[in-house]
Length: 265
Image (cartoon, rainbow, N blue to C red; front, side, top):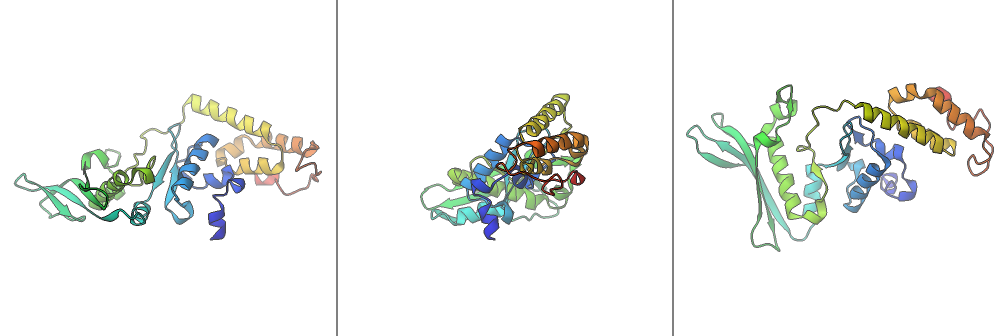
């Protein structure tokens, strides 16, 4: 567990380590990764404990996603937190709108929303949130995706509770989204500009690599397709580094070194 905590030491961070928590298939920039890490560190969110993970789709901005349990954990540690409630909002057969406690409705009722209330010792009025089902249900091929189709009430109450906790403790959770409310972009196909920018980024990183470790760390961050495409360029960079007198603080490395092996490409 010590190693998991040590990862927050800036001296030990590297792009490859952070990127293993990145979901969505996008290529986050170093600036985005630094921003995501800073939020995680400043808010005591630990990716190793699955409290937080990062999402990057295509050219969309990278996002930090927080689990509902992490919101609860942080709220419970705040001395002003006095508990919370959550439930669904339903439409009865007679047309009456009702709030139910928990993720429950009768068979003849329609789910139309969810609510959550957070009670605070330092506030006269509780924080109350009500949200609409139509605004948050996540769709696939014109229908709710599998999770929302099977557990719509559970998913919606999680969204409402996460929002209420963020409103109650804005300094604790600013800049984050709950995992159930993150909207996956409908089109994440890279554009020609995306491909060109990524190509230039890879070329720049290869040119800037000073040691085999730099090259190896960057290689690990690439997708399988990118590794295949830029195989020859990595070999050229490897040969350049091996010939340089600056390799690993001036130490000469034998060409058979396994620090970075072309077979790994």
